[in-house]
Length: 86
Image (cartoon, rainbow, N blue to C red; front, top):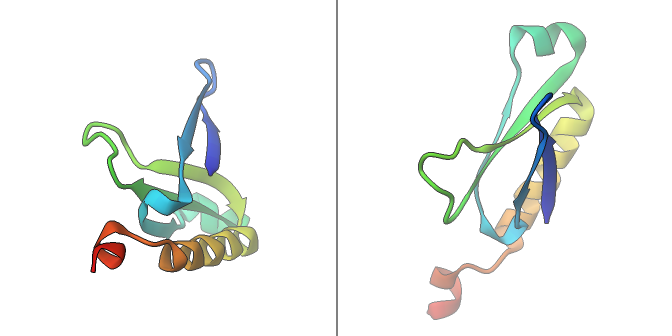
C-alpha cells in the first residue's frame, strides 16, 4: 500500500495498492534537475478517468530511482487476473 499526502491548504490523503499498479513513470522537470530531485507518477487499475495519477513529488533523485525500481519489481511480481485465470 502506498499513501501520499497532497495539498497545501486543503490537505488530503491518496492511497494505492501495489497490486493494482498499471503504470509507473519517473519524471524530472527543469526545477527538479537543477535541485537533484524527481517525481514518480503512479497509475492504478480501477482509478477514475477524471482523477489524476498519484504523484510522489520532490524526492531526491537516487531515492526516486530506488523507489521506482522497488515498485516496478512489485508490479512484475503481483499476480493479475489474466495471469491467474489461465
